[in-house]
Amino acid sequence: MANATRRYMRLIVFFDLPTVTKAEKRAYTLFRRFLLQDGYDMIQWSVYGRMVNGFDDAEKHLKRLSANLPRQGSVRCLQVTEKQFAGMKLLVGQLSFQEKKVNAQQILLF
Image (cartoon, rainbow, N blue to C red; front, side):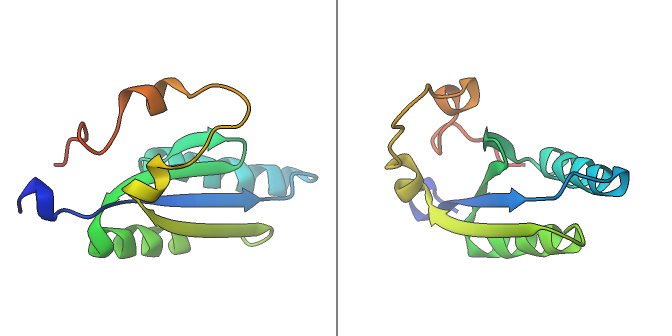
C-alpha cells in the first residue's frame, strides 16, 4: 500500500478509575500497564494515545482495549485522523519528547 493511500489515525483513551482500595489500585495498574504494552503513549494524566494504520487496525485495537477494561470507573476512546490530531492546540505546557520526535511520516510499521 502506498504512503499516500494509508489512513493514519490516532486512538485516544481517556480514563478515570477509582484508586481507593488495594484491588482498585491493582486494576488501575494493570490497565495502565496494558496500555503501555499495547503501544499507547501517555499524552497527559489518564489520557493515552496510539497511532494506528486505518480503520481495520483501529478496530483490532478497540477489541483489545475492550478485552482489558477494568470492572469499575470510566474509560472512553476517541478515534481521530492524524490530521485532526496534528491540529490539536497545546495551550499550557510543553510537547513531550515522544510528540516532538514521532509523527505519521516517521512511523515504522511491522
